[in-house]
Each structure stands twice: as structure tokens, then as C-alpha cells.
Amino acid sequence: MNDPRKLFDLTGRVACVTGASSGLGRRAAVTLAAAGAQVVCVARRRDALLSLKAEIGTAAEFVVADVADRAKTGALADAISTPFGAPDIVLHAAGINTREVAGNVSPEGWDQTLALNLSAPFFLSQALVPGMIEKGWGRIVNFASLQSFRAFPGGIAYGASKAGVAQMTRAMAEAWSRYGITANAIGPGFFPTELTEAVFADAARAERNAAQTCLHRNGRLEDLDGPLLFLCSEASGYVTGQTLMVDGGFTAK
Image (cartoon, rainbow, N blue to C red; front, side):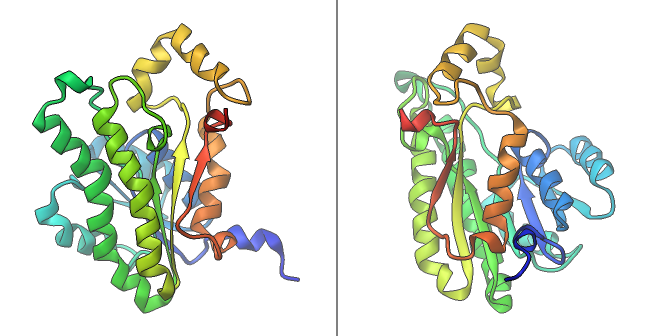
């Protein structure tokens, strides 16, 4: 039997992480690099990306870009592939939640939410998949949400986009897994990030959220490390089209 620890070793792999400037995306970039991958970090904020590169070191490079700008997807894919070669792994952590209640949803807010949360992961994956097909190996990891399966107040646009991510993940698996490319999604519960600042700033609300989980606590960034490594490595070679909820059992209740 081979050493099971090697199942999670990403040495020699190239990963692309969008939304890498903060929160779950930043944590993912650091985790993948620690597992041996060379990581291309994509976000809009140069200063934050410079800080991330300094933290990771020579295993990281970055591209400043708006992944929702569909007209530049081809150029972005080329830029991502320049530092270390075509990526084996693409992890889509960029996202937005406008938190507009149904009666106040604007066309602009709706379009912006779907463009970043749903369209960008598809079209960037589409642009990077040929390189994975050439290698016969690839990992696509999307970010789903509690709202992929539950309706939250003020979350109709975000929830629609994240429900779409769950189905898109299944469809990506149907389309591309025959070439050795798995497509899965992580569904985080409540984690402290820039996107959830309003939630955690309200101590009572954060406590109510924690009480709804089976573990009776909210997420810590390190809780994502193992699931991310699993989905990005050989360990998940026969897992595709799935949404792995990392939510402390929130959706189990």
C-alpha cells in the first residue's frame, strides 16, 4: 500500500485561486502552497496580493484582474498560465453578496451577483480545461454556500447564484470528468471573512448561527484546510460532481 499521506501531496501541481486577496480564498492559497503547489493568486486588490505573495514566498505569483469581466477571460487564462504553466487546479473563491431583499433587488445587483458567483467560475474553467485535458488530470473546486440549499432573508440573488453553482458543478463533472478532471464544490457555513463581517459584528446573530449547527460553533478558517486539500488532490480521485458542506452540520438539522 502506498503512503496515504502522499494522497494529499500537491508537489508539482499548479493551482489558480480566485478571490485570493482575503478570506477563504486567501486561506486556500496559503493551504495549497503549504501542501506543495505553486499557486497563482487572482484578485482585484494589488496590495493584498503583494502581501499574500510575501507570506507564501516563491511558490506564489499573482494576477490583478476582475474575473467577472468576461471579455478578458481569455487574456486572464493566459496570464494565469504564464508563471508556472497551465494550472492543474482551479479554485473559484471570488464572490459577492449584495444582501438585497427581494423587493429591492436591482437589475445591477442581480447581474453583478450572477456574473461573479456563477458565470465567472464557468467561463474561466472553460478557458483552463484544455490544459487539464492535455495533462489528463485536473481539479475544479467551486464555492457553493448554505444558500445553495436554504433560503435566507436578503439572499435571493446570492442564493440563486449559489444554487446555480451546485448544479453547474454537477454539469461540469458530466462534461469534463471523462478526461480526468474532477469538479466539486465546497459549501462553507459561517466563517469570519470580509463577506460575513456584518454577521459576525452582531454577536447575538453569530451566536444564533452557531446554535443552529450540530457542533454548536461557527467555522474557523483552519476548518477548511482538510476539505480543500481533499478536493484538490489525488485523495478525491473518484469523487466528482459533489458539494461538500463544511458547515458544522448546519444543513443536517
